[in-house]
Length: 190
Image (cartoon, rainbow, N blue to C red; front, side, top):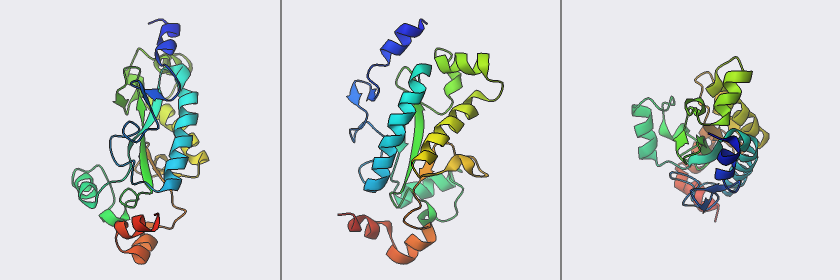
């Protein structure tokens, strides 16, 4: 595929499937609306910088998921998609975490950006990088995430490249002690 056509086809920096990437119904699969305002602001900054960084490679970044209900978090735990043992320990249920995921040139979410051979990212990592191209993409995104003050799941023993959480409001055990349930914290944002 011609690189000029590919880059021109990406459109405006923050447009996804013809819509403003920052509108609440296109930025994420679910859970954007109830995020803490500070998390939203920092997530927007991550997306802006990440999209500028990855645009030349035919990739963009969006928030795949934000707030999860306790039931949804428990489901994630049962499926082995979350390593925590108590749903209230997840920053997702508190509205203080997001999962950033790559978006390919076709507008599809992708956790493995190197698998799309039509992107300049594939060309870059196969020609100029000798390590794992997917891990390289996550590490570069992780650096952008951390610049915005998030704790990044890619630094954890159980690598979670998409995950970013804002711990400036306290550790999850402190949130539980202070608010009991996430809804009590949500009400304090109004």
